[in-house]
Length: 194
Image (cartoon, rainbow, N blue to C red; front, side, top):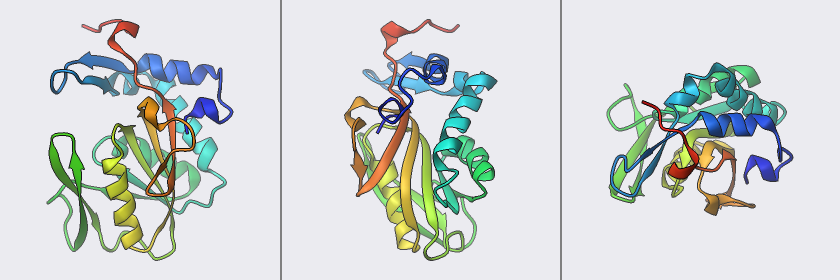
């Protein structure tokens, strides 16, 4: 579900967030309109809006664990976790975590990848939120759900700053709700940054 479908229709914070995201055409390959959150991070007001909206949504859901997907989930996850009194768990690319890990492979448009998580990071029956910057196919978030559930966590919801329009409505990934702040912007809608 998109934020505008859940009580935030007309909220000026959503426009500020959307306007702060730069679109890079044909990156990393032809036909992709890359949603670059770097410019969002350079705008402290828009960045704060992202964190505030997510904190308002999750502060009363008894979330004990916020899992961030490498790498941009690491940007949004920690401030949300701190604000709601939860721990932060990084979901990493292969070979980045010391100690024992569990892993989950997933398919991409152009191949496959894998996420890993420390086996000590999650306790059975913890309530988890998964955060990432963008959902395009749902593959990375689905792998994240699998990892956390294998460790015994209850995934409450997945959250992303940007999501493709196909995720509007009561969309579920592996049976879990998805909450998205804004749709991707098209190249026509933007001002180029030099």
